[in-house]
View 1 (spheres, one colour):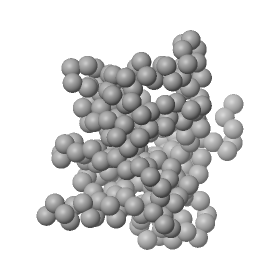
View 2 (cartoon, one colour; view 1 turned 180 degrees about the horizontal axis):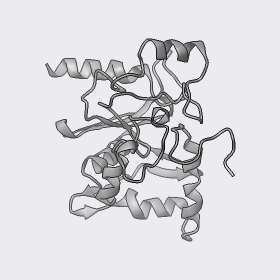
View 3 (cartoon, one colour; view 1 turned 90 degrees about the vertical axis):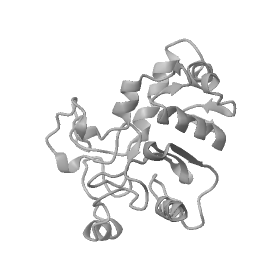
View 4 (tube, helix red, strand yellow; view 1 turned 45 degrees about the vertical axis):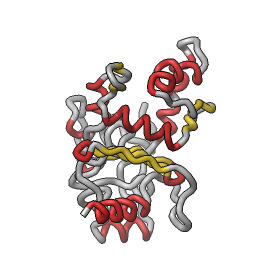
Length: 218
């Protein structure tokens, strides 16, 4: 039975990282510790020497975050070593709506700018984790209504960035951006800028940072 607070699978988008944390329980069944599993499968193979697993979180340095970005930019390959299936990387970095498994009927409740945990730039619209609820509906707050009325959710997620930018956006403004057309990876660690901390992943930092970077390229 589906809880009436949530939609059935493939019918709406909801920013729900707790659901993905349950994958750690799957790793526990392998018989290794979570840290050992990640070290064997990813960390040691691509030189993420400053990373560890703490309960349901992965702690990494900025350099290690950049290495993970390079792995994704390389479609799951590190040199000649295939770490992640390239077909999975392709699906994870594609709009969910474009995948064959999609069978939902409420297209207006789906986030066109989201893959599998990756945010995708250059789409026709996007949905904010802070403004859309578990039913894929706009929250009735003044802030969210104003943003929707102003067209803030139309067009690209980060309008100042290249359209093919793909991003892992984390709590506290931790970022991993990779841009295939520029063969570029950028990792941002540290604390949020003053006044920019958000409970969700998107923030003003994305627009400001990419505005400055693209201006510098001219």
